[in-house]
Image (tube, rainbow, N blue to C red; front, side):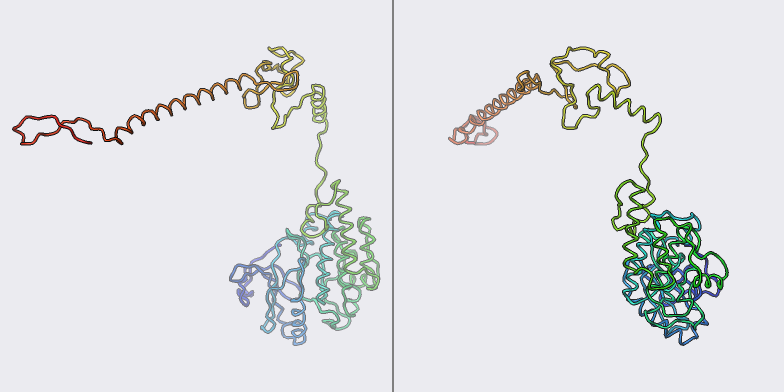
Length: 449
């Protein structure tokens, strides 16, 4: 979404939110990017001064905000805060990162049928939550649909209206965007959930063709076509054309319900995605955050020289009867080594993975495993006989045990000889100083230790 710097006349703080950038301007006011004290980003719309002076608008706007608070759905931007008594009423919704459907189609061209069906299924689910809350959006169009990483989101409920409420303007005038308005809106009749179905059909047709189904022209021309002429769906894919034509019916009673539209779009999204990927759809619902995965294509396979080389190597492996990648739990020694002569391999024993070079085979009596250790050799009777490594290992174990026992016995014998002498109180002779001073000669006495 394009952002612009704040102008001199733009406020810097609205309520508890600090404004950072301009997100755009519409018929009701200006939308800003703001944030609260916790850093949560919001899209904040401030109502135009001339509308703020209209008391009838304020009262109706209060009913709209009250109805918008009841909306609970993953495909809509949640209402965060609003101030209906300010000099210029405002409301803030959750900020949704990502381009609008209008910008994406304008920059990259029409979307694929699978993408359109997936986006439409998610949007119809969002409208289902809106209609269940007793609200009609009344201004659904490509610029009011944001393609976030988690899926499409419906924004801008600024002119949304509770079901059964009177129109915002007088008879003969319309609030909304020409080319995406329903005929009953142009005539000034009461709006219903079928009004949003008409707008969704026109929006999906735009995603398929990058143009409104009623062409281009002035507002008066566009409104006349919406009421009196049929929608042009020549560029819409055959998988979607019948369903979108029913959504664009002049009579609201002829349009599909929100629930049936959601189910049919899911079926189309799953069928189209199955045809693209050659397998089942990863996102079973066909809607929501997985809409970007619809662009996947079949995995590339080797072609040309790569395919011929791959086929030749596979043929060599089958002819040789060997597995180029042995299982980790199996020894990599050749089979039946005992029956093969020792020495260099013949030309027929070349390793297909070694580029044609001749490899030496291990002697038949000393097969080795993957880590270089000797492995048991199978006998002709099917049993196992110990190889040289097992005999050597046994000898080392026996020697180790014998030496350990001898050392232990020697230590025990040495301790046994010294122990009884201390226990029986045997005396030993040590030199001691004689009584009488140093002028008398030294003598030898006995002292018990």
